[in-house]
Image 1 (spheres, rainbow, N blue to C red):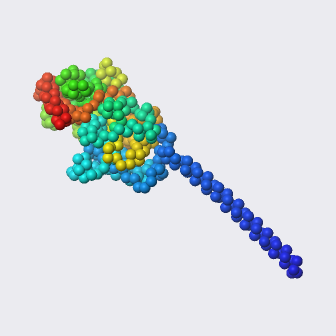
Image 2: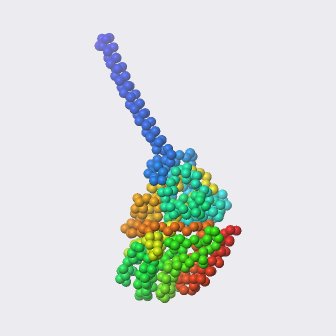
Image 3: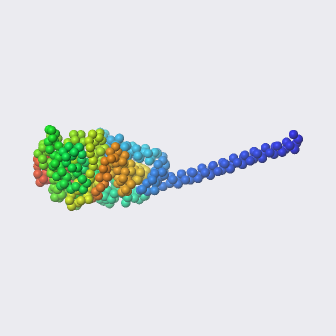
Length: 465
C-alpha cells in the first residue's frame, strides 16, 4: 500500500474509534440520567412518613426507610401477661415487616418482669398496651402516662377515622388528653351450639332477639339428658363491664361505688346471671362446677347451648369448635334498646414518660391505625377501630372459621363506653364476685350488693394512698 493509502486507512481507523467512543459516551450519559431520576423518585417516596404501603390514616406508612438515623429499638410491655407468641401474631410480626430498620422487643410479664420490676431495674418502656380500665389503673397509678396530643398532630393521625366511642373513652379517662391510641377492640356476642338445638328439636336463635326471648328459648333446652346436665344459656363475666346498659362502676364526682345505688345493676345481674339459672338442675350443676357454666361447658363438654362471650372465642378453643356445629349471633338486646350491642373493650397503645424515641414510636402507632394493619387485625376476627366498610368486610376472613357469621360482631351499634376511673379494674373484680352466689341462690340482691359496695369503698380508699 502506498503512503496515501496508509494515511486513508489510518484516518478510517481513527474515525471508527471516534464513532464508537461517541456512542459509548451517549449511552453512559443516558444511563446516568435515568439513574438520577430513579433516585429522585425513591427520595420522594421516602419523604414524610415513608413509602410503599397504602394507608387510610395518612398518605403512606413506612416500609424500609423510616427516616431515623442509627439503630432504633422499641420496647413493648403489658401487665396483662400476654405471651410472646400472641404478641408476635397480632402485633410484632406485622410491625417488623413494616419497619425492618426497627428492633421490636416485647417483654412478657412474669416473675421478675412485672412493671415494678422493670422500673426498679431501669428498663425503659417505649410503648405500653392494655385494655381499657386496666390501661388507666396500671399506667396512671405509676405516673407513666404521656399526653400524645401534639405528636398525633405532628404525625397527622386522623382520629376521626376511628370508632368514636373508643376515642371518646380514652379522652374521658384522661381529662381530654390522649394518653392512649385505640388499636383494636373486643365485644360480646351470642355463640350457640347447633347440635344441641338439633338434638332437642328447638329452633335456632335469631338476630335481634331480646333478652326475654333468648331466656325463654333457653328454658326449652335446660334439662338432664342421660345423666348429663344441659344448660340452656350462660353469660361470661365480661357482661359486668361491657353490658349495653353502660353503667358507671363509680360516680365520677362523689367517687362512690354505684353497685347499690344504680338500679340498672340489678337489671343486669338478674337478666344475665340469675334468670338463666332458675332450674334446680342448672343450680346443682353450678355447685358441682363451683362456678357458672362457661367456655368449657360450651366448647369442651358441649353441654351449654348458648353462651354470651367475647368475639375472641373462636381463637380460644379452635380444636374443640371443629368437633361441633356452631355459629354466631349479635348480643341479645333489651326491648327499649333494640339496636344497641355491648360496649367495646378497646386495647390502647401509648407512649410513656420513659419512651426514648417518641417520633419512632408514633410512626409505629400511626401504622397500627392504618388500613393495611387494620385489615390484618380484622382478618384475625378481632374488632378493628378503623371505621371503613372495606376493613369491616375483612372480619374473620383469615381464620379457619371464615364461613361463620363474623358480621354479627358489628351488626348492632356499640353502646357508649361507661366513664372510667383509675380504680375501675378493681371495682369490676369486686362486682363480679357476686355473680355466682346470686345465680346459685345463696344470697339476695340487697345483701350481695351491700357487700360489694363495702369492699369497693375500701378499694377506692386504698387506691388513693
